[in-house]
Length: 130
Image (cartoon, rainbow, N blue to C red; front, side):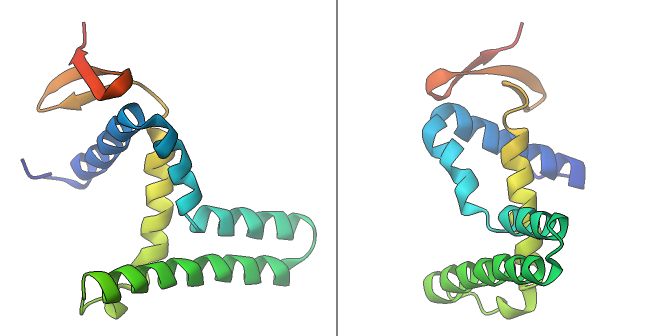
């Protein structure tokens, strides 16, 4: 089934993250460490609060550079994606979105899949919601 709208696509991403959370809870929790942009934003905010805007910009920039480096490593070296450089601006945005999906996965233990509501259970199992 194709996601017909942006909302459907976003719900799909959260559903995917929720299912990962229940099937591999420790690994899913550790996934937060793979997002560089939230740490860049946090560093920028902390540096600004301390009155060190230049430090904040450097740390935020470092978050962007690390996300680009990871995208380049995977995109160019692994999957040989020729469109990689044209999409560089999107990688930091997608990183922030991924963190948002990760955080949203902790908001509930139910999902809607193919029009039916299910409750996610430990071990990656699910059952129809009551």
